[in-house]
Image 1 (cartoon, protein in one colour):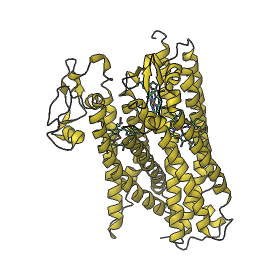
Image 2 (cartoon, helix red, strand yellow; image 1 turned 120 degrees about the vertical axis):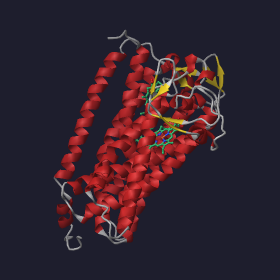
Image 3 (cartoon, protein in one colour; image 1 turned 90 degrees about the horizontal axis):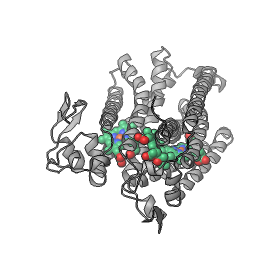
Image 4 (cartoon, protein in one colour; image 1 turned 120 degrees about the horizontal axis):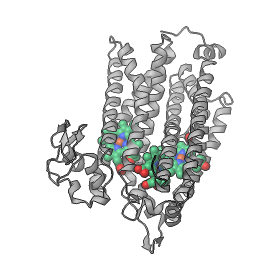
Length: 448
Ligand code: HDD
Ligand code: HEB
Ligand code: HEB
């Protein structure tokens, strides 16, 4: 229904692929840490329930890794097919971190293989636990390296531009640019937060369905304590990300907050709609909050949209993506802290149904916040593929067949998504916790 334009189709296809990949990437980065925490608890408390958690989570993790590899490979392929000019100009600048991601992945995969097949191999349980550490490091390093590429796109440095070609390249300066610290730490900690909430949501679901096995209560407690820590960390780093934007990408921050006039004591705008003459209606305004997010004090001057050339502004709908992410962040922090608090108060019941429902909702909401965060930062980088250096249109292919590619990949992702869900649900339905405990000679005597 609109005219064929390879740039539009390439953007849709790239966004679709990355948006799908990031679901598995997030789980891939976060779950290993949760496995490690559970196995550690199992050893320290000599409690087989925690050990079983680590085992079951590791088994499910393998399925999501497999899909992560397929979709990750699709990204690699599409980067050179859809963005040939971008890859030609920047390829040797970002080649180092791209290669390092592959390396980190292989590192992780080798230890994952050993880990899965050596559960009962050693007398000392500690030896098996040590194997999970390189998995955690490898998974986190994947996120570290690939996100540094994205940081480079947001703040390109470490080269000189001559006739559209980047020369004098310094890969390390490119990797460690001003966007890198906040971006990488925000991505990694939100991966942890989201993974903790997804595992917590599964436990809450089982408890809601009337399965009151102590295994699920322990799983819920472990994941919510972790989530509370990560949620608070996310808020702190999110605040630092805002300060990064203020200093280095003020147009993205102004677009996110519909902030038109350059001024101090700027309010944070929640929700609302924008009229044709750029007036904000029906929004909740938190006085001074934008100035504080940007610079830490109410008198920080925040540059407004009116001070940027109109053709260099990103689409203003990223405001909603930003709001959604921040709202979900507050929600996740509230729910996890409330759970931990109620569980700590001995005569309160943290396992009440409303709270269980709230945890259950938190799983998908956390993943939605990941998507919202990426859409916010990626669309907020428009119209640049390399901020201030190369536009998206300049980086794109001129091929006439991107539409067909798009349809093929939509089918591929649908098949992958459905298969993944079916394999996972069959895997765990056919092997419930009760049966697995019995099989390992553990009775239910210690059930509460
Ligand atoms: Fe990205 C575009 C989403 C990480 C490299 N990405 C793009 C778009 C979306 C996303 C929605 C379309 C934006 C538009 O055209 O309006 N990006 C994501 C998600 C990511 C992600 C969900 C999490 C995994 N992206 C990411 C990284 C890289 C890129 C880590 C660097 C290797 N993204 C690109 C790109 C695109 C892009 C290929 C195509 C057009 C553009 O950047 O501006 O360079
Ligand atoms: Fe990724 C995987 C690429 C983004 C995380 N990846 C992957 C793969 C590829 C990729 C190719 C396969 C494997 C190998 O290495 O070989 N990615 C990529 C690219 C990008 C990305 C190109 C951009 C564009 N990722 C990403 C991010 C993250 C990640 C952002 C984080 C957050 N990945 C990842 C992981 C993995 C991957 C973790 C592994 C698998 C699983 O799932 O685990
Ligand atoms: Fe976020 C992004 C803030 C929460 C996920 N963050 C982002 C940004 C900012 C923020 C500013 C941008 C950056 C750049 O561009 O560089 N956050 C924030 C805040 C908060 C938050 C303030 C509240 C607390 N997030 C959140 C959550 C999540 C997230 C909850 C999930 C879970 N983000 C995100 C992502 C992203 C973001 C994924 C993309 C990447 C980067 O970093 O960029």
